[in-house]
Length: 249
Image (cartoon, rainbow, N blue to C red):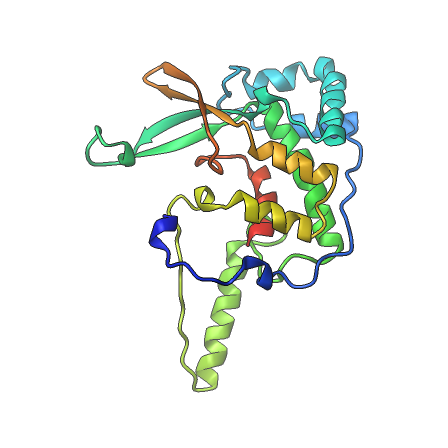
């Protein structure tokens, strides 16, 4: 897609504004926090490549909370994510037309439950930091509590009605990027994370998150093992990734 977009000589850093003087601090993970996130897992969801279903993770939580807390704390302390947590199980779901065309399939990506928990832990810390320093755009309605597409619609309608009252015209430009997450430039993303205060070990964690990712493609009950995947993420990725969308937008 990048080849179809007309290039320009303007460096993206010119749009960033003043560099944040604040830096994120990653609080230690507690057993209570891990227990809450395990309980929040949707038991009806599919399992990842490890074939450990969410229901099982919930049932054995009293035995796994302590070791999981240790592993998650080590991840936040070292900036390293276990490679097994970066393997996605991808299932191509047919959409329409010719079944022989790859483009007619939508990839659904599922990560292991233990990966989803770690993502949620980091997501909450990033969101807390961004909210504390008022870094989110006021019209950022996606992936935020007490915000929704309904509020976005209300804001749009309010501006349109105000324009009508003032005898003004309203012009709207709506963009829908195909495979939007796949268009994310990692270098730009990481630069923006650092600019807004995601630094040190926290930044290393995100760098590690984006590298050495693998995927297993499951088709007709057969698996093609561990293909390298340096793209952003496939459709169906866990909402923890919204930490990135806040910054990239």
